[in-house]
Length: 115
Length: 395
Image (cartoon, rainbow over all chains, first blue to last red; front, side, top):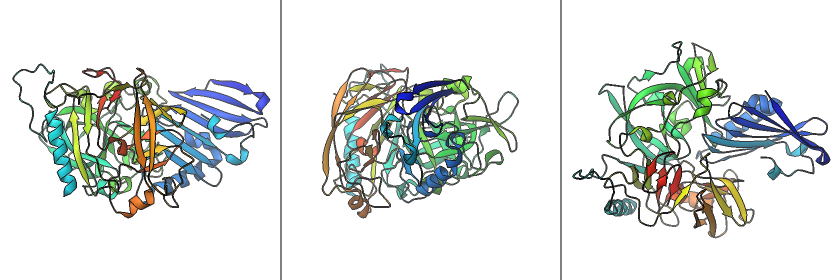
């Protein structure tokens, strides 16, 4: 996977951009090396188990609970779990999403900057 | 009954605008309403889709390829946010032809949606008839959570996928948005696309699939009427309606009954199918107009959110009158007025159709309420029409 790193050293984080099979993925990495946010856009969905790591099960459980609600609402996803905020939107050819861990967000970045 | 009366009045209105067509098919009589290139679409009227709000559904006829063994399937979600036909295998009583790769392995697919959901199952060839028109042979997605030894919780989609129409809220999805193929060039060239899979008894591996073998918009394969669709829906009162019916007309300006209404504007989408919307001074470049979403979804911190469990919806004390500007890549723009009422009050009516249901999101999704009381034309990519060449939306 050819990655590209953009430094935002002055702001205490860097962004690594990876392109895989029509999907562009950005990882937001804090100065101490922790990934605190990811964003993606492209066709389909990225490898979320790999991207979310230990948070994947929390994401999946939250999503399942949301989808079991009645009435079942079809809308862009906004999911807030104990540690994670996830959004997904677009249409099947051009989907985008982002996820971040609010507790780990550096003060120099707002959620709107993650995209 | 009064809503069906509204629907009938509307249908006569749309057929009334069929004059002046430029089809050049001299001597060809227009098809009678309800057949040929017209599908009846409804909200709240059918057994599976009727369990949900603002969910637009139709029926399609699917045949075993090359035979007269056919089945009509109801409760098919009409979706501009996806491309191609998907039907639960559990509702099929006919057998279709499995698509295979060069080694003879069956092809399976994951389809992803903006709500975070995914569907899994084999890709199979079917002869599909829309609205009594000619059959087209097309790869469709047969939704089957157990295909190739997988399950609703363990599958290549890395998602909990729906196992039954009841889980999903529909028997299938008819994706008739601006694109032809559900994946496109990426899946033709990149084997690690994680959408198409070559499967054996219990293992599936991501694989390339040619454009012609991808699940695709059946409208694009019609012998005529293949440049897009027109979705014409009546409006509903402020507190909603129990049910509604309207028309999905195939083709734009290709027959006597599908001339666009006078005065519609064409908004060309970008290469990703997005339009731009400006709302309260903020520009959203990835806006969608999507009949498969159940409400208006947009960010507005001044509107109070509802209490659990509908906390994603807005619950203003009185209906909010709002406006936004939609812009196409062709520079065309239009102000859109819309209203958002208290979702909790709307749901308490027990109605299924609302033109003023809104909820929170960080970008803009003009869902089904946008379509009520409108005639919206959807131009397929690369196809010329009297409104221009797709991809576009016109209203």
